[in-house]
Every structure is written in C-alpha cells, then in structure tokens.
Image (cartoon, rainbow, N blue to C red; front, side, top):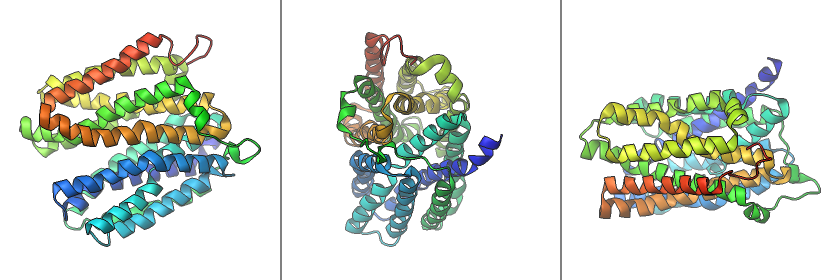
Amino acid sequence: MKRYINAVPLFVSNAMIYGLTALYYSFIQIYIGNYHKSDVAGVLLAIGPFVSIFAPILWGVLADRAKSMNIVLAAAVIGSAVFYLLVGLRHDFIYLAVMLTLFMFFMSPFGGLIDIITLQYTNENKLAYGPIRICGTIAFGLFSMVLTGFVEDNISVVFWVYAAVAAVGAAATMLSARVEGRGSGAKRPSVLPLFCDSKLMLLFLFVGITQFTWAYYLNYFPGHLSGDLGLGAQVWGINAFLTVIGEVPFFLMFNRLFDRLGIRGMLFINLVLVVVRYAGLAFLTNVPLLLALGLITGFATTVFTYCGSVYVTRYVAPESRASANSLMYALGNGIPKVLAGVLGGVMTVSLGYTASMIICTLLCALALAIFLLTQYLPGHRKNRY
C-alpha cells in the first residue's frame, strides 16, 4: 500500500496529461469551425498530425539524455499551455497555423513520455501499471463530458481550463519519483539502430494500420451515423462514452494479460477483434450492435500501442527506451493520421463510406495475415512475448 501512496503524484500526472489531450482533441475543431469554413478548418486541423510525425522523436531523444525524464515532460506540458492560451487570442489563418504548430510541437510527445515514465517506474517498483494509467482514461472522458456543457456559450473557457490543468499536471510530474534517462551517462541514445529491430518495426506496422483505420473511423463514422443512418448526435455521444469505458477492463487487467498471454497472444486476439469491428462498421445498421462495437473499440485499438510500449520496456536498450516509444508515436500514430485525413476524404468521396470501411477491414485482415505468417511474432519461442 505504501508503494501506491508514494505513486500518488504519478496517478495525478497521468490523469492531468491525458485530460489535456481531451481539452485539445474534443474542442479545437469547434473553436476553428466557429471562424473558418470546412476546407480551411481541415488544413488547420491537419497541422497537429503533421507536426506529430517529427516532434516526438526529438523529445524522446531529449528524455533519454536527461537526468530526469520528469523535467522533460513537465517542460512540454508548460510549453503546450502557453501556446494553447495564445491559440485562443486570435483566429486568422496564418496566426492559428503558427500557434497550432508551436502548440503541437510541445503536446505531441505527451503519450510517449508519460507511458514510458509510468511503465519504467511501475516495473522498477513492482507496481501494477493499469490502475495508474486508467486515471488518464477516466480523466479524458470526464473532461470531454463535463466541459461540453460550458463551451456552447464561451469556447474560450477551454483554453483557461487547459492552463490550470497543465499547471497541476506539471507539478504532479515533478513531484513524482524521478525516472532517469538511461542515455545520460556513457551510453548515448540513438534512433537509427531501432530501425534494425525487425520485431519493433513489425509492431510499428500493426500500430500504424490500426491507427489509420481508427482515424478514418473518427473522421467519417459520425457523419455516417447522422447522414446515412439518420441517427441523432446522442448516439455518437453514447458511442464515444462506451469507447472510453471499453479501455477500463484492459488497463485493470494490464499486467495479468501481458504475463499470461504475452505480446504475441495480445496481438492475435486484438487483430481478430479489429477485423470483426471494421466489418461490422461497414455493414451493420442496428444501433445496439453498433454500440456493442463501440464498447470493444477502446480495448481493441488501445492494445496495439501498449504492445509496442511493453516491448520497448522489456527488450529495447535502456538508453533508447524513450526514443523508441516516441518513435512509435511518430511513425505509428502521426503518419497514419495524416494519411487518414488526406486519403480518407478521397476514399469517401470516390467510393463511399461502406466501401471505405471494407478497405479498413481488409487492411486489418492484411495485418492479421502478416502476423500469422510470422507465426511467433515478434520473435523466437525462447522469448516470453
């Protein structure tokens, strides 16, 4: 129990940092949409994913070289708060483009850094990772839900709430037990050798495919619900809530699942789940069944990123772990989300929603086929994946 009491600042840090992501992703499109038409808004919203291709790699190297990863993460949190406040001051295109670029430079490493800090701390102190990480899931859902009622009359409240939450998050990160960057000594982190790790690259491929399909779903499934199926916005709201709830069992059983099934078993189960999920999204029109798919979404989609993070924690050299985890967020999340925005629009306009979802299903089926061809992904029998 004492070990968990000592980890209270880390609980708070996870909650606040994932809460910050909700304050951006749940509301920035509303703010931009108030002042710009859809085509211009689309360009502005594409800045974040584009910056997140490159910036996390730099932050990962900095974290590996730092004597305290906590300081690096806290600096990113404070920097993001400054530029998010500046985003809310003006709304002309050039100004917003510059501020959003600077903001995303600081925000993009959040996931990679907080995950590797928490995983490394829990591994070293023999704590369960799930109860700490689940604070982030709950905070994400609560911030999105609670603030929705306040932004209709005054969207600017989001920027000030973000600054307050960032202050708490940065303080909690600094108060958490220090996690050292192992590349601060004689051994220096390097990104290039990571590309020679075939197992890691294969994991990145699976993360990338599932993030592309996930981003397409987020961009176009709400329109399908309202336009094609004629359902009200409340159905999407319930679906979004169930998606968050779907992550809870995964994080509560995090250590037991990976100890029992290994990375290999987790990948197989969830590759099957995502194939079923996107096939259902392509053809189902029954609301309860669609909501049931939403419930498995959080579990199925989230697992791939954490298979990568667990692999990094267990098998990547200590001096390059933050770099590797940040590289996964850059290549596995950033690039697919940019492609989903660009190609997703082309797919939907030229082929329609159903055909596009079938493509998403086939991509996930391809990932499953690659997994089965490798048989014992990501490596040899002697390793407990």
